[in-house]
Length: 177
Image (cartoon, rainbow, N blue to C red; front, side, top):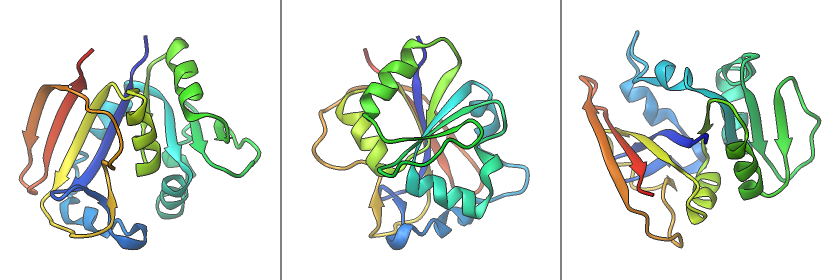
């Protein structure tokens, strides 16, 4: 069965964005030639589930090809109907029904690339199987929290912790079944 994985960065105090969806703090740990395992991670996925705000930000900053490279199915979770573009589907239905359906299909793993609303909806239904969280050495004090209140307790199994000379620490956990 396919698993859904979270691969995301947050500040030490748990924020994935500053106010106004500002991700500039991520630049603190940019280093030429260092992708913190992203290429290896994405080699094991063929489907991306992403919130519309996160999708729009990445498309405006990097370009649509960051997601739609012709080898992956992309599901942008949105409230607004839009026509499919390439392998990108703008999905307005039930997130849990979509994930249940995707997990039942054959294929590589599924990557949840945010945002916080999508992540927390998946957590409420215990649907995230793997957590790869990069901690950026900054205390933002405000913004968009990765983990919101109002979800059930979940016990995780520790896999690895890696540190990098940029100060980034990467934590890898799996959901205990």
